[in-house]
Image (cartoon, rainbow, N blue to C red):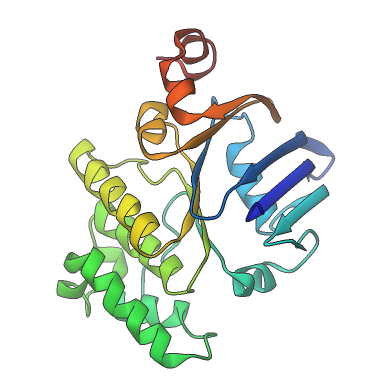
Length: 236
């Protein structure tokens, strides 16, 4: 059974419709990427899944309908969101950011194990544990944002433009660790990424959006090797 099933998803900002019946599915343990130009509806799709915008249509997570639920309730079911622009508390320390993220978890031993796991993936954060998040480099802030989502104990992570504004070497490092998290911690991922070549390297499945509609889908390896798709929709 699919971990996430989206059927006929429409989304609205006020009177403006941003998604026009988007449908896709994500397998347990998989990495799926949503690709498309700016304004195609990628970020809106992630926000819709988290209950952050007004929607119509069906969204099921692990077989349960989650449309219309509060964002906090969706998070508690096991969906972690890493928004574009990091979304860390800049005036709190690294340690405080991570502990706030784990605050609602009842199993404190599991939360401690996840904290140890986070420091294994991102040792630089352990070295910066008492530093204010706002003083970290862009790459370190992105690592902290991913770590905060991991501290929720998610089964699915929604990642919005994790490479945005970062140097290529840092991006390679973060994507390498994301692959490890997927393989070792068995966290499924839905990735929105402007760098299509990078996303297709990481993902096993891809959906291409254009003006709020899915126009193409398939295995990432097939999408990556199709020159017509790359030129038409991905611009490289």
